[in-house]
Amino acid sequence: MKTFKPKLGAVALSIFTSLHLFAADVTGDWKAEFDTQIGAQKYTYHLKQDGEKITGKANSDIGGEKREVELKDGKIAGDQITFYETFDYQGNSIRIDYTGKIAGDEIKFTRKVGDFATEELVAKRVKDESAAAGFDAAKLVGTWTYVSGEKDGANLDKDHFAGQKATFTDKEIKVSGPNGEYDFTYKLDTKKLPVAITMEMTAGGGGGDSKAAGIIALDGNNLKLCYPPRGGAAPTKFEAPSGSGLHYFVFERASDKAAAK
Image (tube, rainbow, N blue to C red):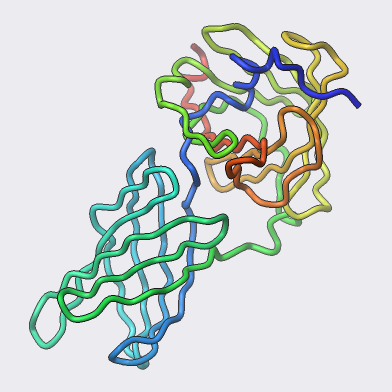
């Protein structure tokens, strides 16, 4: 099996290289349990990423006392994430700052509780084990614009993806942008988790013998795609760390206006 040709580089690597890349996409739920000066705490962080901005809420259980708080001033840069919450304690508002390092499906946080304590914890992504069984291939059909992504551990500037989009039919993908168009056929294996996708270039690059095996997921109006552009085994996680040779992209469904351009 031949691999995706280097010609994919400039734009075809934009097949799936056309994205506003970040070291990770953290949208979703993350759980953590850790000990503190006031006892064991259980947290679920509900995160939503929009470019470099992070919003969301946290639900906590501290000794049976449950609460929900807003996460504020959330930011992501590369594999670093920061935000804060406030905690009312005996009539005083205490700011709790989080600084985290993202590594696949884990975030290692340092949590600074005002001037009182500094704590270490690990939040783990909540996985939907029924994702493959519930994968609806029909929802792939349509036009998608690039939101974020990562190429072999490197981030791409947002402007890199201006004017680029990917259009799916039930069997084909067309990636188009200012530098041209690239056509692919694809096949899915929904029995695997994550769902597997095999792509073969048919026009715009190295010809019909260029293939890549990857993984794909749908999350509401977002689509995730991770694959090795120059061939090799399909990844098992949606990440593309340095040295992996992988590309990982997140798309969002295009509006009717964007799709028509």
